[in-house]
Structure formats: C-alpha cells, structure tokens
Amino acid sequence: MPTQFVLDARDLPTARSVSLVGDFNDWNVTATPLTLENGAWVATMPLLPGRHVYAFVVNGETWIADPRAPQATDSDFGRPGSVIIIQAP
Image (cartoon, rainbow, N blue to C red):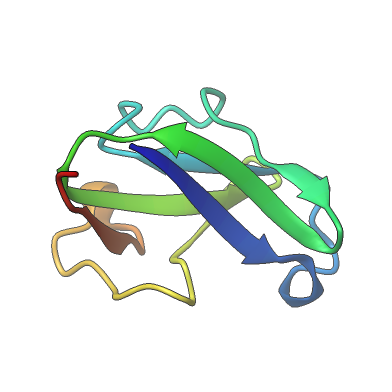
C-alpha cells in the first residue's frame, strides 16, 4: 500500500536533510530520503499491511518520532519511534 509520510518543515527550521527509517527498510538512514515540498518533508513508501515502527532522521544524526503518530513503546535502537498500522485492502 502506498503510504505517505509528512513532517512539517516549520518544526525543523535547521533541517538540511530528513530521511525515513523503520522496520520496512532495515533502519537504513540513507534508504529513504524525504524531499522538501511546499513547506513539508515528504516521502511515499510502499508498505505491507500490518504494524510498522519508524522514525525520521534529521541531518543524518538526530532521530525524532513522528509528532502526528502514536509513539512506539518498542522502538529499535533505544531511540524515539512511531507506529503506523496499514490495513489490508
């Protein structure tokens, strides 16, 4: 299922780059860069149905949870994370 991730750029005025990491891309910081579009960092990722844990990485080093999603209590690497649940069509 194509899933869009959005992070408001106003919340990250010093961001030069943002990437999406999660259990769906092996927490690889370089695998899914976001692009800056109309004041928001965005990426669309195909996800399988189920529960996924993810985070954003700002400027290649600062991990943040998605402020628009529930916090993950089981974040990998002991860093902040969020949860998204994708329903089967």
